[in-house]
Image 1 (cartoon, rainbow, N blue to C red):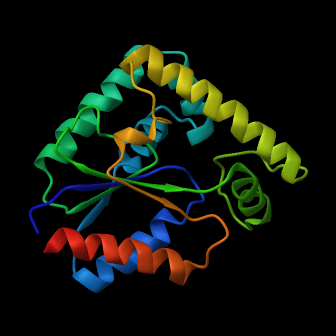
Image 2 (image 1 turned 90 degrees about the vertical axis):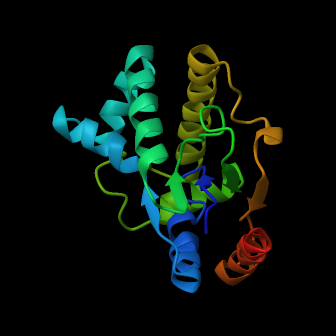
Length: 185
């Protein structure tokens, strides 16, 4: 397969699980560019959440991540690129799939998750998770508009949007599978 497919956004939209199933079915290669972000955080002795705040306040750091990621993606042989961030603004020929989830379901999934690692502090309730995510998304939108002049919430940037809200894993897999199959024709 000579396509580059980016699957993005947001956390807890079942990206990893759905992509693992697609990779298994089609024998595709995948990379998670979040590893670049994590590598940079670890190299500076920060958690993901701490490093995210640093990037939020430092546009140059964001541009360095973008350039490193762009080089990584352009030279990798993987078919599917998994990332919370979108890449349509730097790789115009990429097929960009956005997996969405409603803010309420996102908050429920995060709150009920047994292990979120050290990326975030535990939330006291679903409402606290919802407010935290809304604030985070607002800051991210502002940052990306400022640094890249791109509105990641503008759905016209995405080739395909799959809303995972209220659907089973199998329903979401079937929709993603149909779309991937149509690209292979």
